Each structure stands twice: as C-alpha cells, then as structure tokens.
Image (cartoon, rainbow, N blue to C red; front, side, top):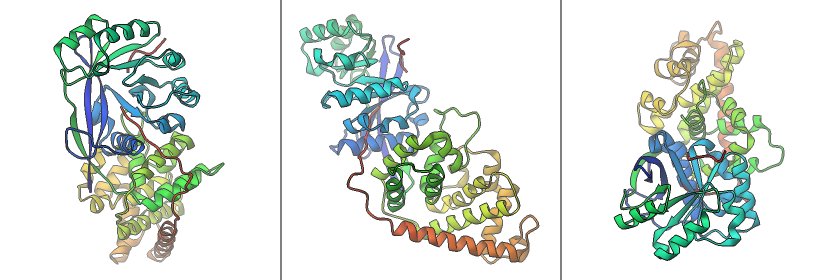
Length: 423
C-alpha cells in the first residue's frame, strides 16, 4: 500500500487561536514541496484530504485552505468539497480574466468562501475582490510602504486580510497594528507533514468510468454500476460521503445511495480526481473474488425479497479489504462508518448480510452443503446463483481490461487548502 503525505500549516487569528490549516502538497515525508504539475498536485491534495487521510484527521473542526489552479476554478471540480469547511484559494499565477471570474462567481454563489493567494493589488481586479472573502498578502513581496498602500486600497472591499510568510516578530507586530485579521508563517508555526495510506485503484476501471461520465445524459444507475465494479472506488466513495463534514444523520452504506445523494456533477468531479492519481498495480484475483461475493450476496437478497440488496453487494465486495490492505477489518471500518448491520456482517458474519457472505464464501472453499444454503434456498439453487455470479464477475473483469485510453479531450483537474461569511 502506498504512503501519502499532506503538509498542513496553521492560520491564526488576532488572539493567536488556530482558526484554519492550509493544506500543502508533499511528494514524500519532507518539509518542502517538490515541483510537480499544478493540476496533479491539487488533485493529490484533494484526494488525500478527502479520502486517504481524511479532513477530520487533518484539520479537526477547523477550516481547510486549499489551493486551486485555473482548471479547477473554471471546470467545477472544486464542488467536490463540503462548502462550509473549506476556503478555496485562487493561486497568484492565474491570469484574472472573464473565465476565472465566472468560475469564482459560481463557487461563491454556491456558498464557497474564496481567498486570493499571494495577492498583489491591481485596480482591474475589482470584480474578483468583490467576490473574495479573504485576501492573503505575501509579506516577502512588498516593502513596508507598499504593504501600507495595499491595506489602504483593500479596505475598500468587504474582505478580511491574512498576512502570510510572517517570518519575524517585527512583521507580525506590524501587521497586527495594520489590522490584519489572520496570520500565517514560519515565525508562528512551520508546516507539519501528516502521513496516511492509499488503497490502490484500477486505472482502467476509473478511465472507463470517466469516459462515460462525460457523455451527455449519463444515467445515475449506470454510474452506480461502474463504481461498484471497483473495490477501491467503492471504498473511497463511501468513506468520502460518510465523513464528518457531510454530517449525515445516518450512514450511507451503499453505492446507489451515495450516487443519488451526491448527484452526477459531484460524482463526475470526484471520479476525475481519482483518475488523475490512479495506479496500475492491481489485485486482479482479489477483485474477481470481491465481485463474485458482492454479486452473489446481492442476488441472494433479491431471490429472498430482502430489503437493501445493494447493501448486500457492499458487504460482499468489502469483505476482501483485509487481504488487499493487510489491515484488520475492525481497523478499516473505523475509517468507513457504516450501519451496524453492515459492520456486524463484515466483522462477525451476523444477520442476513453476514449469512449471505458466508454462503458465498462456502462455495469458494467447497464447504459443507448446509453452509451453502440461504433463507430457505437449497444448495442447488444457491449453486446456480454462485455460477451466475462467477460469470458476471469475469465479464466485468474483461470489460474493465478492455477499456481504452483516456480521451485526449479529458479535462485535467487540481486544488489546494470558516471564516466569517458575508451576511
């Protein structure tokens, strides 16, 4: 399993209380970022913060500042974030034009807070300044006279000022006297690298799904079907939607409900991010096993007219995560809050879902006939369902293996980082 790293640097208010953390790309466990493609770095930060490590572990109940490149601002990828827990930063090297302003306006109208990173004042940027909530000023780029001029000009707008790269006490006290609301820099705190682990994802499966996502009038049922074919995608999607930042009253334990809840646009953005950092190393045998178990458990539920057959599928495919990740199931489930019924099925093989999983596994190991029965179905009928599931799983594997390369028109994605909302 691959290790992943995210840097985080605190952002303080005037009383030196931590209000937020900026999330920073790190290629490995080191204090400095290495140069990479901006879109790929943004994609890495988004994926790691939402799925590999989790926002809760990275920022707790604080706000996350995330840098966005031009493509993320203009193509809607940023909508994958929970809007009340992030501030989206417009990077300083982005040319401010009508397309960028339209992208920022769409974000703010949807409820996102936007910050301008390393900002140097320009009167022509007035439309952007009217949309921004926070302006970050890099102290290393301005003289003291220029800093005073910037503060005077920016106070015309309803924005909060954040002093970044505060490296000395003198700089901190100066900005405090100028009325800055927030402070960030080495004088206050250096970035800390947080480490996590990544579940490998089938690159071909993701690319196949992305190609379908960008077709017109894609059906949510089709999205569900394609996501369900990949164990890693399914795991990450459910971990994502069940994160603390969505605050759902009850867990979502099936791909179908996750897709319906998030909707086509959010799913499209999420899958595209996955595609940027997908890996080629696969566990093909385990994948087939997972598909067989999932399909058989689902078909057993349908045959016996049991509710939530899609949750039976989830139990089946997630039952192989221990072998794939070499981690105990109870530890994995701590990262993926599911219903008690699903957890009981995966941990103790309890309940109808646990019985269905036991039945599927019995065929794998050619166990005694009584373990191959399910809810009044004899081992002859369950055997037929098992063979159907095996055929279905191999068909799915073949379909994924034959998926073509990504479209050359496939848009690239990327991104970086609760403050006072304008009333």
